[in-house]
Length: 370
Image (cartoon, rainbow, N blue to C red):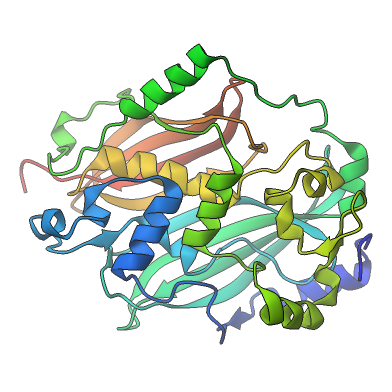
């Protein structure tokens, strides 16, 4: 049980030798098919009420003729987060770089391959010496068509080092007055789903702001619901948990306050676990926050839009109690290879005014001339 494992040169060399090696997993991560239930569970986990993903009668009248899944649904097929080797060393999902080639249709069945593409060393204010792993995941459907590719990256840092430095210990948990909560709820009510009304490329201007999507205040309920809809690499029960821990003994993380031994993923659900690594409380999943920004983009582009690319960096922690506003603005519009495209800057901003996840996207919109 490597509770206080340190990064060694042997670990680094072991990971470096895997760069460029493509692996085809034999055990599914979570979802393998875009069914009505799996799509609904995922959109429930994101908090996305778009009828294109949920209402069969509505979806029949769209260009797809059926329910589709939101682009970020593929997180539930496999998290592209870059986690190879480094036994006993903590990992933080720190970003994703997506490209989609076709929509995810009801009934699509998925396989995927994983390729470690790079390993970089850097110094971190939070944890000192850290390494960043970059992993590309290619998602294919039942016809072996490439549906999407995503390169995700994770920071690997020693648990003790990150806990002792305590960069985030000064963060105070959010507190709200009734008026502040009602203002947040009013922002929920202002959410705008473009839906069946096309957002034509000709009607979009540089500088246009996207109607924000609010998430929060973040609760344990939100985190549990995310795992229910998007899956988890570590959350297993009873015999399956024991068998997994026996295969991966270095995975164990000991809670120094309770002495309990469990998977490191509980940093998302238990305050004491998060405090072990220098975070004041349980915090959200990186793929979860990225999917919130995906929700913002699909709301804005409407049923006839297509999200081609999406890049996001996860720069700050989003702890239980925080509220996140997903925002965006149009930065460019252009025609390329016959497609009418729009570049959008997006970001997640908390109640402290901090941008926790900046990003950018490329959206294909319908044109009045086509």
